[in-house]
Image (cartoon, rainbow, N blue to C red; front, side, top):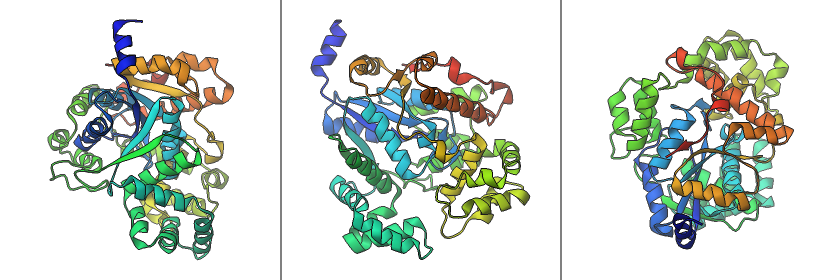
Length: 414
């Protein structure tokens, strides 16, 4: 064993996992990485589970997976693994569970860390336990029969069981994700511990970019408005550099609207049965999307006309994205089938070496290695490859949108 490896094995105490999108990475994200090492020790390794080219809100990532993963490693992460597409573009519950599966799949992490509005992991875990209880499920069923939204019904049910103060934690987006991480760990009877730190800077979806730390939503809004310099100044330094490189190559910024006609063409070519396959709850939402897609001339118009008090925009956006990518919820795998490496530094490479013994599912560092796996894993990887090719069609410079990138590109090594 080399001197480096020996030193690493002696000094390395634990690895913490983080579930991320970095769309794009800002200084609040850097703060979390620093806080992890302040709380767990400076030698703690950080493993990230990151969405690929599409994100949980049902949208295109503003810049591609490799650029974001590389920026993460340059900003304090050690290893970035991909949250597979079926989990990355799903509800908060499924997204969180996919990220947890990826991190548990390494066999290395002792903690899963995240930012939250409340900063109280005990309170978040208490809410998670409540949401998993039979009592809450019964309360929830009664509420849903009255025609209210799932989120509103869950909130009311939690208030009855926990009181308004604890239930109010379900009103904030980072708290919600933290609760979902705790739920996933509890369901899986995992010994991995949740760790939270108070979110700093702007709120999750706040588009006011005037504060010291702007949200990712605010940065995307600046880019959409053409305020490039203002947006760049609010990104983490490594993210800023990665973004500029992607921009110079014609691959950034990426907006859904660039693929508007392709998305509309896909929707108009779908049958009612095709739309029905997108409706997980069989609640008739597919009928509203089918009807509006026949006449609407923009995705925004489809979403506006299909929206009701019961259905959140994010759910509608995800269904439209599933249609564009050719995804159907019924075909989503139940479990993460492999760990795909997006980026690593020297510590990350040592983690990968250790994962040869600890990983619970295969680890892919070379795209061709997927051919050695089972049929379901190969199908998932091929789905990822097709989705990446469709993502590339939204590049500002179409000449940069050469297909097959997933099959050619390995991890970013920093």
